[in-house]
Image 1 (cartoon, each protein chain N blue to C red):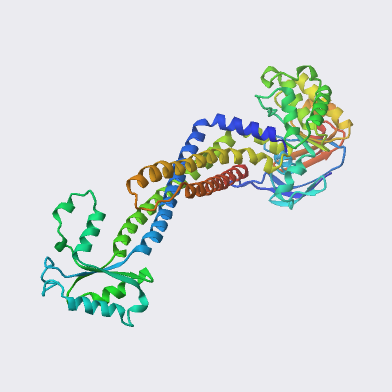
Image 2 (cartoon, each protein chain N blue to C red):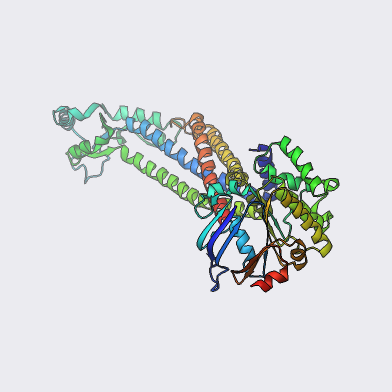
Length: 232
Length: 304
């Protein structure tokens, strides 16, 4: 599903590489936490997986595509198989909940009939069917992130990338989001989530990949945050 | 492809950037009007050349009693002089170049002068003997005027040989300079139109950066993301081009045909059909420039 070999990335004007010889294999259906301090390379790694960025060195394959050689015009079609959520939700403030989710189907050319069918379904899944006509500023942070999640999964992606999705949320709300992610994972979607929320990592006991200064320092299954940190 | 979405975005973009859009319309309108005017001038010059060069003749003015002494020391041209000139026009050297020639004596020259200057007070002060007797020579090829000029200049009894084309060339040089000036102004304005379009497109893209970000994230094709911006630029420039096309037609209709043609009745002016022919070209140029500028601007914005 995801195969990363010796990937390094140095950004211009920065002496230390953001990623330093990172190798990582992620299987279909995996739920992987990427943990580490700010600047440890979590977001860089996610950006590489989405092909927002290309490594300076190394090889990266995602969903069977070689992301180094992929022609620019094929990138959009590659991304249609990936959902992504962010810490800051990134909803469109002038569109309702329904329109926000529908927008990402419209712009990839889905038919109105498909949209009318798919959007209410996914809003039901995230528990927002009652609020479909609200605007983002009328929603709580947790609700906004659920809209963002709905948008990320409405096209049934094989892979869901989450960059600190609970970073702006209180612990109880964070838990709601993580429970949703679990359900999405159980439906067969591969999930890679960057976080430094210890509570969540400890609670879920999934695969934890620890990054430090651009290097993977541990990669453990079924452990908590502390365990993973200790294991290095 | 959802056309509804695309045109909704275009309408929104145009509304949001209204003042920029209006300035694109105005700048393309003015610059293309200059381009169109320059083209009209060139066409007019071409048409006048065809018309006048065909009619241009070489005049051999013979000496009269009023001629200046340095050109005509022996005074009024004698019958011998006329016979010599006529013989020379008919000999084998010049004959192949000459289509026809005719001679006007003082009275004939005077009646032609009165016809040409009918209504002008100058006719009251001029008398027949002041006007030169003249051989008018029409050439097979009007550009061969120099042959006649060289053959007869300095011949005794000839005051001056004048190729009418030399008058015409002066007029055409002035018109040519005017059309070059119009082209020059048009180029500068078109350049600013292009810059204005790319600035507007970048600004428009910036104000929609959230939407663009989401579209790229969820995998909208580049064409789909870029299309509304390209249409926005093309639309604004298209309106300007249409106005310019209309202005060119109006110039021909009201100024050339309505004013010039009635006031200068003996000149063959370009007609409305020529202007109508120019309009689609002007429109095409405007749209093509705007499309290129928009595509380059949005591609560069998205790559950055």
